[in-house]
Each structure stands twice: as structure tokens, then as C-alpha cells.
Image (cartoon, rainbow, N blue to C red; front, side):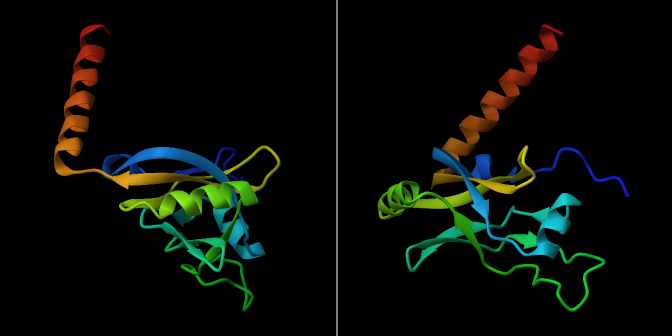
Length: 150
């Protein structure tokens, strides 16, 4: 069975809902069947978010489908997964998270060159309705200029 070469699972809704202040790339603590499902591209990070629990950063509500050939060792699809960051990055995120209205959201789940699963996360602030309208206007203007100069 041929596996997809480039695994890149995106959270497309995130850029519409949030303004990104800072981005980080974190490792994930996974079980064997989870990494196999990710390599098959069977994951969804759209509804995911990250929280601090006892000084550790935990990714919640990220769906990694069960591995088809997994036996009783298969994982729970929406279990909490620990994110691996340096102490400096964790302290920075935890300090910034104390500001009102900030959250940590997953942007992209990918496999790096070494074959490790990584999760790109962002410290983000929720957008207001008028910010979303401005983004839509900018995208429409870019589409129009691309059509004219094509």
C-alpha cells in the first residue's frame, strides 16, 4: 500500500476565526496506531484547542481516526494528547495565555523530514465580525487582481 508522500492536515477555519500572534511547532506524544492513522491522512484538527494542565500543554478535541488494522490496542479517536515544547516556549505561552481573550489553537498537522508527527500551533486572539468582513474584502480584491493580470 502506497502512503501519501506529503501529509499536511490544515485547520482552514482558524485563519478566518482568529488573528495569529505567534506560531510554534510542537511534537506530539502518540501511540503506534495514531501515527499510522496520521500517515494515512485520517485526522481532523478543525475543532481542536490546547490547554495547560499541571504545567503541560495538552491538545484536546483533535480527531485521529482509529487504525483499520489495529486490534484491541487501538486508540480512542478524541483522546487528549500531550504536546512537546521546550520549557522556555511553555513558560512564554502560559504567560501570554493569562491575557484575556487569547487561546492556543492547532493550525497544521504534518510529518517532518525525519518522519515525526508535528503540530503547528498558534497563540491567537478571536476576531470580531468586522475583522472577518475586512478579510473577505481583501481576499476578493486579491482574486480580482489575479484575474485581471492573468
